Image (cartoon, one colour):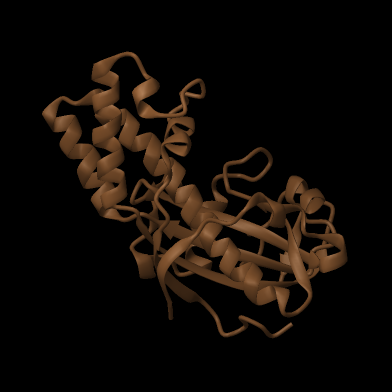
Length: 235
């Protein structure tokens, strides 16, 4: 496998705007399909304001790289060139069984999301801030999947398909891996850092690892539907 073997790749893109049904699902209002279905006028207005802010900031930056799997042990997935222990987890070893390649990535919506949330806190707008925070979480996950889809598109040429994704802090994969993962994908290129508690800055940032297997063994994630990106650029 030599596709993507030229180190870290940077990706910048806009995101397709979520529709109202997606927004309400992200805000945990499953009984409504439109914002006008919500009876409380104050809640309606706060959601509309948060939605508008989110649309104005719906872009991301990401960095990613791939590594060939050398060995899958009982408690660790060993990949070529990755720091020792980066994928040390019995859960990952089970979920990534049969993997030939692993994608490593970090994405962020950027500091302007932090600035917007901090501004709402200063103005005493807790409802709008809560809704904007939830929409940011939804959009950064969508951004992560967009980068993942880019990796999948390239690796498909080698007959590989996605098997499973996982993140530091999920069950059985220590959050402490976040720092080494950020270093491995050079997350500082997009302004992402991990603090001593392994929380990411900017706040609307995530890291992800994704396993790829020969196509006849994979494809389970291909049916989820990848997000649409607009104006995508890579370097």
